[in-house]
Each structure stands twice: as structure tokens, then as C-alpha cells.
Image 1 (cartoon, rainbow, N blue to C red):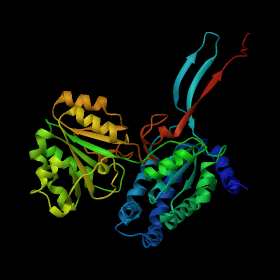
Image 2 (tube, rainbow, N blue to C red):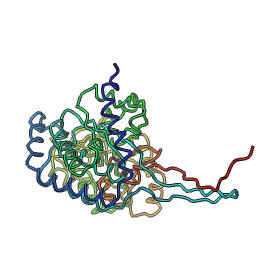
Image 3 (cartoon, rainbow, N blue to C red):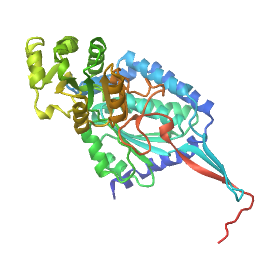
Length: 420
């Protein structure tokens, strides 16, 4: 018996549920999502208790600890995002294109659900709520495979959602939580004919593993090796605020800054650009030129010489590298070599430099004079997000409701037949 066969009944329930979900009236979906948000708030104590069990097994110094941790404030933020998704219009049944052919056939291209969406993710229990809410609004069933680090949190949340679904008369197969073991991962990777698309959310290692081993379609999301280039024309105050926010707002998320690139002619401004980072105990791995400038202006215990491995690293921690360049083109070359195509930014007042950067950088989201912390579905006005796609097929950037749909052609005729 293969790993997939062990889970056929669960996958079939998800597949059957998907047949129903795409036909639900938008108002009913809104009611169910609000009911889930209400239940989460009523059961916040239970969620936090389950989360505390998970946290007790993780070292607080582990960068993943912050992603795993839930607080009452974060729960209210999560339920706020669920309610926001509940307010959004359904992405289904939208006419993308119509054609009337010379033979009288009327063609209509219409949005439809993807069907069953699988998500493999690590220590982020909020993903369980996010994925379910977006999938339900877009008419999709979801099959979730969380990591062992968040097993208790995910289990409690999934059961809470199932209870709401049962109470609302909807199939509980709308959400399936697989156990946090390798056999379940393998089953999901091999769920041909059951799961329409698989989305990994987590480390580059996880994403690479899923891409290399999946037998079903994959949308890559997540890993962010993020740069901000401070140009020769950059405004110092803007730059200092952007660097601080991009690096320290939440270090464990994929839009956090990993490498500051600075034009050589602005090295004297580097102490001011990095001043507030010391307040957060950010370790800086500086190249030779930037190290010499910071030697007497940044805490010695937080300043280290950079090696090549520090460029192209997603730190997910209070750590950052600095690369000095002699031109905009050199900065673009550095980003080209090391970017994960997630989020990249320039701080510059020269409109020509800004335009060149925005046109040249190959990434899902490219910023001018703004923090990369904004790469987020909710910040983009999409409600919650299912992930940040770093690939180019189907979806790119924050994936919300429209990105969870496909389309079909509806053809209406009047007895038309095709001649030889």
C-alpha cells in the first residue's frame, strides 16, 4: 500500500467537498467565515493553551519561535483578516472575456475554483486560518500539512473550523488537516487526481523539497532573500526609516530585509542609516569598506566581517549583511546574483535611477522609497494571503482570492455542428 492509498478517504472527502463549495451563495460563505472568526475569539484561551504546548518544545532563541507564537493580539488580528475576507466579493463567476464567432457560437471565459488546494507549511498556525478562509471564499477545499512544531495549535484550530462547518451544514471535508509526519507529506506530494495544486510555505529547504518530489502541480512561495539599495541620490531620513522598518518590524517573516546595498559615495551616511538597528541588537556582516566606516560607529559586539555566505542568505533573525557598490548597475548585478525574486527595494531621489531599478529588477514585488514589509496580501488590500508566489506561472506576488481561481470556457450554440 502506498502512502497516498492510506489517505484516499480523506482526499476523496476533500474532492467531494470541492464540488459543493464552488456553488455556495456568497452570503452564505460570508456567514460561515464570520462564524469561524466568532468561534476563534470565543475559544482564544483554548488556542493559546494549545499554542503554549507547542512553544514549550521550541527554544525561544530559535528564529521560528516568533512565527509559532500566538498572542491574544495576534488572534484578534487573524480574526480581523478573516472578517476582511468575509467582506470581499466572490472571485467566482467573473467574465474574463466574451466572443461571438462568425458561426454563431457564443464563447465566455469565466472564473472557477481551482478545486482542492494542498498547502505544506512549517511553524505558522495562523496559516491554518488564512488558507481556510481564502479557500472557502474562492470555492476551494483545502488539504493542510502543518509542521510538528505547531501540531497542537493546528489541530485545535482545524477542529474549531470543522465544528463550525458541521454547525453550518457544510461538509467538514472543506478542510483536511493531515498529521505532521513524513508519510502524510509523501501522500500529499503524490495525490494525483485528488489535489489540484500544492503550495509550500516555509524555508527554502522545504520549498526545494516539495518542488523536487511533488507529482502534482506546485506554486512556489515563501523564501525571501530581500535587498534594499541605498542609491547615491537616496534621502538619508527615508533610508534610515526604511532600513529599520524592513529589518526589525518582524525578523522571522519572508519580507524582512537581509542585505543593505549602499553606493560607495554614501558610505559616510552609513552610521546614520544603521544607528537604530543597534537598539534591536542587529548583527551586521559588513564588507571591507562598510566595516571600516562602521568600526567606530556601531557596537563592536554586533559588527562582523562579511563572508560570501552572508550574501544570498535569508537570515530570519536580527542579522543583516551590507554590500558596497560603485554604481546602480553594480547593485543590480548583486541583486541578480542573490535575489530569491521575492521583494527588492531602492531608496533614491533620482527618477531615472528609480525607473531603471523598477524596470530591471526581476522580483514579484519591487519598491521605490518604501519598506519591503508591505509585501503582504492584507497590506495590498487583498484580505489574508495564502502565500507570496516567487514564480511566474499562474500567479506572482501575494496570492489572494483571484489567484485561487482558474477559468473555463462556456460555449453556447443553437445546434451548431462542425463541418469537416
